Length: 379
Ligand SMILES: Cc1cc2nc3c(=O)[nH]c(=O)nc-3n(C[C@H](O)[C@H](O)[C@H](O)COP(=O)(O)O)c2cc1C
Image (tube, rainbow, N blue to C red; front, side):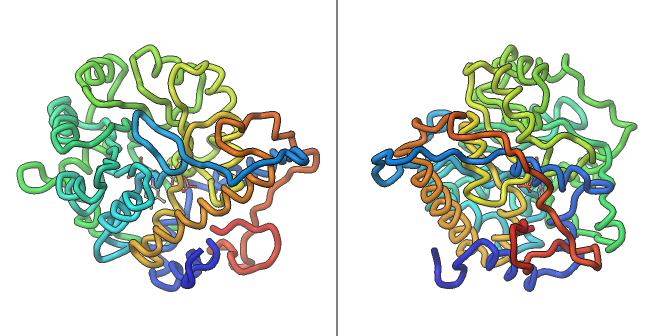
């Protein structure tokens, strides 16, 4: 706990004060009618904890490892774009905070600084880079080479939607400066060209044949981010992925996708322990994270919370976020009766009988209420 940010809600409140309503809507908003955004949160209410009495636990140990990297806790910041809009030093602040927290970092390709410039900020922990497969093969191959040459620990491959329909951003007329997220596309490869490739149906979309050829060339650990089906999970493992990353991208790209948490058990079944399973989408609290870990996830990512923490206080904000998540998680694991992550399991969960939506909006409708007391989400 830090004096500036005693709770996660304090971080969220400070961030909202620091950014314009337009940027806030970009960060917290979701796709289309935001049904999935609500569902991502409601999915957590479907699980309740079953603590074990008098388990005789000691201080819970949260340490683990991910793809050979020691992690002080099974939590990471999911990759997010346009970091410079949130803080003048951008993702560098996030990288330094996650390195100090002893966890590995996940970087979006659409950051304001190049991945080469950011690599040292991740320190010994080293980072992983998310990269969307769009545009010509040569572009993708060159990008993978850059990630590997810069010493990153791994690659997250995503499919790319041709366009997003985010009404809040449309309403607000948000026009983020390209340079806020074009640090990887300097002279020689114009950012406009890449963005067009991402957003245009005219550029041929990637298919499995192209994907297979590409992954065969990757020397560092890699995974697909955005797996929600048993089929894609099995395909990942068959193609040699080192992990599977369950996500609906925080409901930002397409509405009416199922909550990632709801798909986790099915993906875990399909993977059958062959590789670690990571997850993000909708996680706001230590207890949310604990539910995914008890179900069998190896690590959990936070996207909006990471972006919000950067906006709230740069490195100090992200450090506070990670400390708070660590404290919440440790407290909850202890109450559950577990001394370490290895003790966790689905026996500590039950399906909620009266589980329901815990997501509410202000009467104005455009902002999510973070001030009302009660079992409300942070964002
Ligand atoms: C502002 C913002 C920008 C994002 N940009 C990217 C991106 O460039 N690439 C990507 O794979 N995911 C991106 N995401 C999605 C996150 O990686 C993550 O999947 C999602 O935010 C998780 O849901 P949560 O926000 O509920 O934690 C972004 C998320 C946010 C909030």
